[in-house]
Image (tube, rainbow, N blue to C red):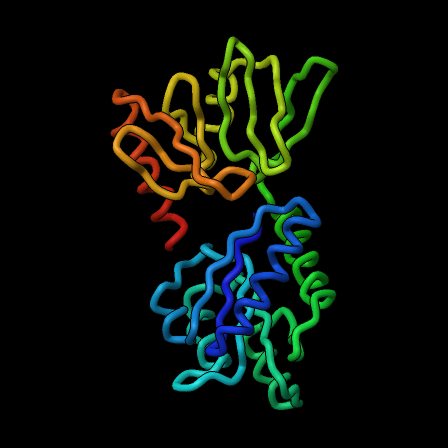
Length: 244
């Protein structure tokens, strides 16, 4: 998954970028999560460390410009990739971008191919820094999955089904085996038949957790009443780590 923030006071630019990023996700089978903001102050008000992989930030905005916004972000988050979008690229802008360790500059009007190139770099960087891969037994040998690609895991008729952003994968391994391997990661077994990846959790409703599936639709996964307290505690800890 690539988590993207868009920040531009002109709504049409945000909408154009949203369409580009969604196109990139569809063409490359990459899950994308987009959050749009209309000002630097609005972005900062809602900013959480590790919430985004990349921020596309307009340079010219009223009240607080893109460079001022980036300076504030860098006080708490040295890792997020920042890409400035501007109609006027100057040497001064380049210097300010260097000061906040900007990933790149995009010239307006925005072109899809340039956005695509930047997203490719961001995604490759994320994969290089990704958590360990998961090796699974399947009917014809072994399969390798990135943990970040797994949305949730389910057992059905004694078959283990891993629901991923690329589709479903079946394995002959036991849920208990994966629980031991993944319990210290961002996964939690919320029900005897289900284990979820906290990175895809959109909310909790009564006795279920809402997960965004590969089609960007919400799916309710049951949470056992015996596991709910532990699940909520683990989810709170995970959210806390993402915010710090």
